[in-house]
Image (cartoon, one colour):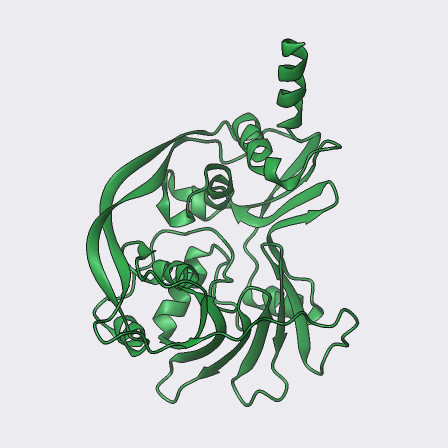
Length: 313
């Protein structure tokens, strides 16, 4: 009986079937067309017992398997630049909590992935409340949108990592857009006269803020504010910050209209991080917060080896 139970458990930890294809990073024109058509799909998507991973590099896939952030993964240079499209079927009776184990088995089998985790102390930026207290407002309670709500003029729907995101440029003003998502509510994005991106975010937790800041810094940002719940806040980011996020996201360039924290998972080396003493720190200080450099244990993943071209379908 024990052997039967073990065999059944092992079976449940693998996809029934999976197809893998290398994917070319979309150019700006293709991205624009996909956004306008509402067909843009990036990241993990689940529909019934089918799961897909769209335009995801190996670094992003490994992040799902080992529960670390993409920026905490090191390995061969190509793991952040070569993207893949994967479509797989989960066994009947399985559930989404088993996807990381199934994906791990797939990466080991088809990519010959060999990796190990570490938990060493490293430099981080601790996001903390400033001496005089924070200056953010508590976010309003989110409301459920009407199921039969009609699309507004100029509205486009995207799906990033399974999260439905709505972009509306109509009526937002020149060079502006309003982005709506379940995670962060309404977000107004506009350009300032000095060329920065100004974002007014209806709802964001401090953990989400730390995760949003991390791709723009030279070390990970960790939440040490002690603040719970979500807040309404505004951030000004330079175009260097935006380009850095887009390149680390592995999509080949900036995608206009993406909300904070909604950039697809992944990371591509080679983009200089923001100066923590510059514009970004000033934007954080306006919120009544500060970034302090500290040492802290951070989980990391080392990819020892992997095949860039997976075994055939």
